[in-house]
Length: 386
Image (cartoon, rainbow, N blue to C red; front, top):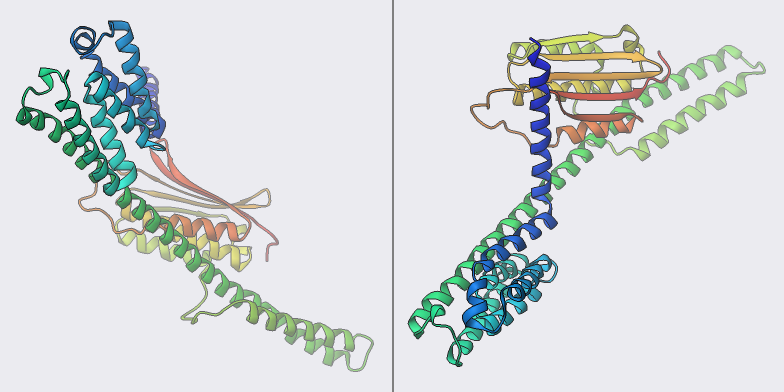
């Protein structure tokens, strides 16, 4: 029993280490540094040959030159032609082919297929010129066939891998752009729903205000307040007309978004689908404005849907409370341990829609995994209770 806190601390430390390593490995500068170090390690295997046969460099000087050459790969994203030019100079001076592989890959990946093709053609042509000149080392090819069998595959393979990686980058960028577009569309749809609800709720109240003002005007019957009530009624009608002009009604296809009184129905349907739900609603929350209740309903509805998709069978805890002038909504469910048999169908825009609905009424929103559970928190200003 006493070992449980220690084991939990070890697991949390290991998880934090994995997150840090993943973040570091995904950083472009870290990847460039790792690439440069890998290239330097491979070129370092040839330091004895550079010091003895290929040129007059001694061991330390050869290591320094190779380090400077590998450092050019730090520019492989912004200026891949720099590392390519350094690689060609290494071929002409040191007969070193390793840097050319990394340079051709970087050129093809970060500048595309055309640049990669031109780069490999220039590399093969330059290497052939160096081969025809005196001083080309035997271990780099003592005949034309052996030279071509060494130089050409190195360049073509590195360029081909770079072109394939470039295509993957383009696909990922397109997917990210598509996801962003879907999120924007979800926000626009949510704004349309909000506009419809505002029209229904506020328009109804303005209509009632106008009607009641007319009633009071008739009751005043020529008294001192008759003109005031008539003016108030006309002001309400004018505000209603302005509301109709500002909000574009997009085919009203049903009743406004339900409020807190509809949450038990949501819970019942979720439990029938296999997701147990614990629901607690503060009585004061039921006296909030319809717009705030609609926002809460939207959040809880989306959370229950997400729980059924990503954590089927796990219990969901829903709390709706009013405290310190704020309406607080929390929805928690345990993260699913077993992977689902099939990937859930999801556009990935539900969270963006919830956040937009909450922020539209001046609230704050957060969602994400925390200590083994997925937690959604929303806080809205309570406003005046009805």
